[in-house]
Image 1 (cartoon, rainbow, N blue to C red):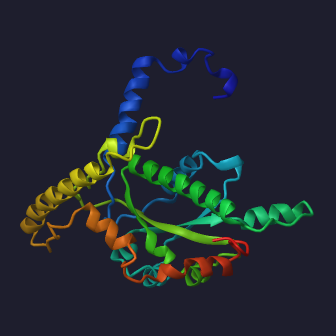
Image 2 (cartoon, rainbow, N blue to C red):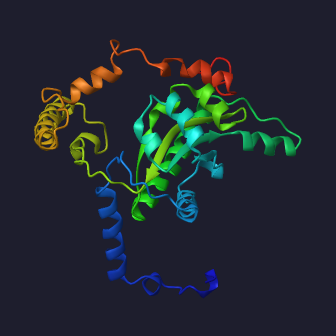
Image 3 (cartoon, rainbow, N blue to C red):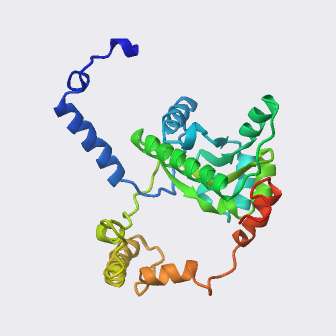
Length: 283
């Protein structure tokens, strides 16, 4: 169908009743999201993957730059090397594909040189644009995959050893893996994780400083209640229980306080500079 063939009136293109049904389906799919870490042996057909990537490309992009690429890894030996560099997470080996979601300014550098120009140094603002656009692309990709009956989980551990992972994937300068994504036909059914109260993230006109503590209190209690429910399910399966005393504050302090445990990602800034990002004085 060509654009000229479309009816002029929105109501003719998509009646209100149908629009409501389609909106409900999209919202239902978004509400149903869970990270899936166990997969059937079934492969993910190339056509399905290409459809997901094409849908992901419709995500918003700053100034039409589209500064991202995705490297698809299916080869068992290469996946094993990715697994070793990404905290040895079993789901990387079990999923039929591992997707390396990359911030990509190599393409922009090539375009500039084709025009007889040089790419400006990739400063913090430019890096942020790349990270934001890649993340929007990635979330669209996962949503498309879920709509097709697949499931997945993002892999932040892809930033543990960015230089080594870049070599495994043959990435040129000015390209790095922002995070990974395992995809496949899920065979697990995890309990959906709760989210912060809507009022904790939805502010009106100005940031609501007064309610932060109250929202943290409420979510601490909600997380502990969730842990108790989860442990009943884990106990029935004979699986290891989680700490029921740990609230949301504990989680934030564990990951973000000055007492957080050392991580390979602590050297991400120097790695990015070695890969052609963050001009001198940035970061």
